[in-house]
Image (cartoon, rainbow, N blue to C red; front, top):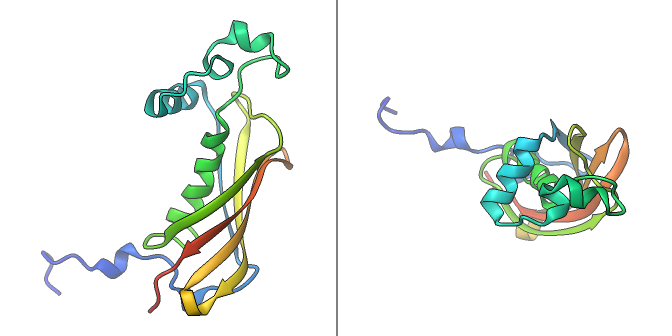
Amino acid sequence: MSEQTPNFEEFYGYRFEDLTVGQSAAYARTVTEADILAFAGVTGDFNPVHVNEELAASTMFGGRIAHGMLSAGFISTVFGTKLPGPGSIYLSQTLKFKAPVKIGDTVTARCTIKELIPAKRKAVFTTVCTVRGKPVLEGEAEIMVPAR
């Protein structure tokens, strides 16, 4: 291959044949005020519980919380960059929000292969986001993974 021609194989993560049940990967990030404001700006979700400290202080959360979908986005990071990685297609995701995430919390998203469906090149994952070891989000995802 010439230096001018991109090698598209470099853009792929794991192939379906490389996956095994129980395989897992994680991504962790400490949520900042800038993350919450950027997420609100990109999505248009300016719910006061996320952006207005005075109002949020009067809620059951006692202060501002991050958007639940921000934590869910960290699951997407695992799929798109780690396992299965680039080239995979996110097909579906269930989510159960278990606890709030606040500014300064470090969210760890972990995705673990629960089932492999060879006929369709699909992998079913359990997905969980934790803060200090406590689940804040749980779910299940289905990912299509390229074959060799």
